Image (tube, rainbow, N blue to C red; front, side):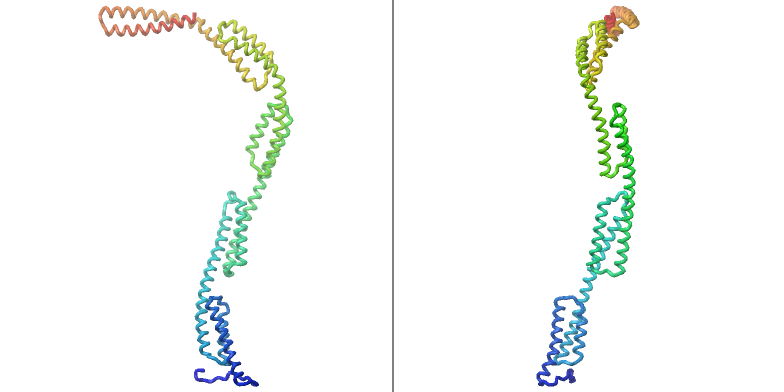
Length: 397
């Protein structure tokens, strides 16, 4: 090789051709491994142990214990070293890209966890946020188990941030629900007290007082803080049940009273019909006497069912108002002061009209058209007033 002979070894007990074939096969074995390595490089297989394989093959060729084109094999190994180096660079670039993506994904998990933990505990949606925080933790475990390794320092720093965010979130959640439990207990206690009062009133037969108390209790109930939905619904059912007992009893009592008062309604309906026959008022004295008789019998008839009370009372009040109005009108007509004022006004108008007639006669005699017109207009106005006062006086007489 390169002009120098190298002994490759001995193989006693066989022919020269057999011995030479043995050492040639050793070279062919190395070449076969080179071919296999070339195929791996060509297919861009992972470069793991490729350089180590090249080194091992170089060492075998360097021992000079085989027969073949050693320099050609070494040249092929030199080419492989360059190709493997390029593959390693590509692998590193790809690995760096995957590692950067994995780092960004882990950073996103941590950032979202920190964002959730930073929410105002009074405004956060705990069910949704808790579920999301659990999803982030599962994503973290999957990445930790099967994702690209980020290096101990990176992974430790990210885990500390993620763990701190989860710790803050859990602390806020425990504090929130602890306060919620405290508020719920206070709300339940307040409403239990109202229920106790409502249940105590449920058997009352003092209908007016108890109904007022139930209104007060209802106002207090509305003003009370809410317990949890489950507790609040159960408490409301108990409160409403106590109310229902009372109002059912009251309705039954009212129905019984209404049935008892039904006969009274028949009497008052007849009296109302009798009162309506007085309208319109023609004879005030007779109408007043008849109305008083109706009133006396009205009181004796007693109460009517509540549903008819307003209608029946309004009907009688209509007749009473008509009689009262007739009385007022009669008083106005017979009032001496009103008559005196009317008569005085009549006298003054009549005097004024007489004077205006004289003025008109003088103006006509003088032929003064301006004064004639003014006297005529004044005279017409006074005569119109006189007619109106005379009508009023006739109504008062």
